[in-house]
Length: 597
Image 1 (tube, rainbow, N blue to C red):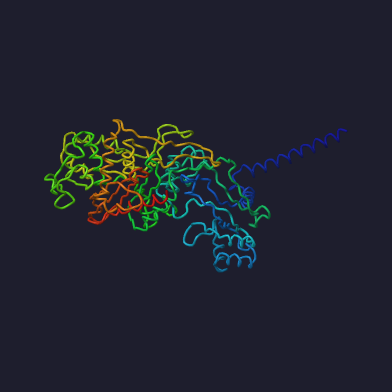
Image 2: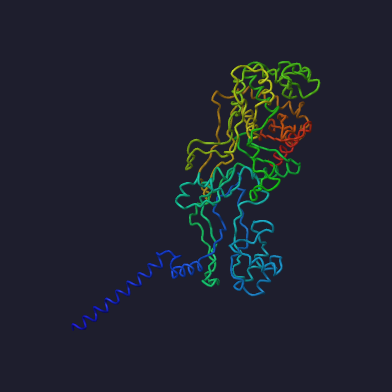
């Protein structure tokens, strides 16, 4: 009995020791640095060998739509995903020949392509990194063949040509510094990498956190330790489980109007300039075009430009005479029927009129219609700098114009500015402490320090049409969950000036003057059209790289009796004494808008 007990105890000790050795070996494999232990390294290699190769087929980033729900970003195409495999595992020669035939290349070209694959990727458009969209026929043909490591998958393109409103929607890019500054917590916790794709400009930048709310959809391709596809397990798609994301950003843009205007200005050869179209009732941005173009998929492409010129404050020239007249009427230093005599020379400050010999006798209203420099230099010298500045502010100038909020909007925490790149307009770099007649005369005709962006110019027209009520132009009206429910509404907002609004009487007189511009003044050449138009032309003398150039403007509205749209057109860096390109574009744009009603 004692012998049996000793044997059992001995056996128990042996079993305990063996069990301890097993635990110790497992601990070495699991916990010890793999580089120092060959067994752990072997296990790690086998694990990696069986781990999946991954491709993102949808980033989960929210999309932009126009006011009617038309997609502005995001399109699903059928693409060819290709994973790296040893050449002998791809399949037989017949299958590869079929694949080459479907893609329109030779077998040798296909084999060279497949052997060069080191990372998972997509069959691309030749000469680009853009995944190629397969035709329905190609998709059908691929379904009848089997080549390992190659699959047709739905791929979500972010941008598609012709890239409508590209400057305003913006672009996405890798930006490590922005990741650190804007997503410091996520980066520090390891949930976001430095090479993450983030918004680089426009709405992609200002709404980046919301757009990133969705999760990626990932295509995984599994192989065994020998690199062979795992039968039945080789392909797997994993995606987000929250049906409320990604969010959709509903813009105020009208895709048909935007598309038509972009095609029109390109057809007319606008090389450098802007078109802004605002709804007169709400101030919402219906269309916004900037040239040179932007390709959001190839930033820096020759002939393109990332600058959104609609938000850039530049020399306004004679369109600023609207502000000068408003200030004079508000201050009571002139009246619409006051008579002036223009000989073509002001007699001070080297200032002359654009028309040789002058305009002769004319009223203030006629002075606006014919854009007489002498009239506006005269009334500008009757004003104080503060009077001119205050009136500009009442018309929405002297600040940023775009929609913003310092408070929370629904679940959105403030502050929020939709177009953060917008430059504030400038009337005086520094308001002079004492009266300076030359400064006032030159400022009054839109020269010297004055800078206005096309967005602000169009919004000034909205303010006048609305009898002095200044709006904040929106580019986004609401944000929706993936199921269409509202996430947040961005309301129409007025932007009153601290010292009150322009009087309705002054606003009406400005409209009368702009009507006369088209009936008998500098805009007479654009009388004929679908809608009766009213507006103001402008030419600003500028110097670019030591060369004399001009900025040509036309801003206005239509139709005259029931204004629907306010339009600002700017053609930049034009040759001096050339025809006003902006004026002719304005007429065509207003006709496009009328046809689409």
